[in-house]
Image (tube, rainbow, N blue to C red; front, side, top):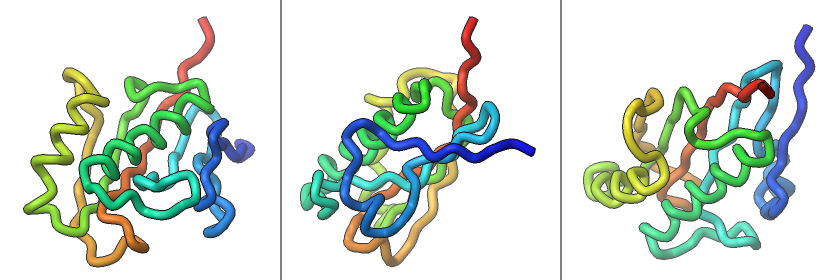
Length: 132
């Protein structure tokens, strides 16, 4: 049976403790990353939407790094949006800065009505690279 190992970034933010969840779980060569939001260090939402999306991607990147991964190791992404129609252009611009060129990971975008005060959340599954 594969063992689950909790992964946290070096700059662990307050939401992990407040809501009792791991930033990511490593199981074998897979990494499941919990939903990352654009929070300030104290866990509060960043009010500027573009900056909130950027912080969510930065938080995702930090969690991946803590597990020895990059965004290039991500195979599946799910994003949650409180107003997809009006937010999509901003999200795609930020996404392009972080994800880069094809091939892109699988991506599912979901419109939601509540994200605990946030307007964007991103979760991912990555394959952890093996040492050569």
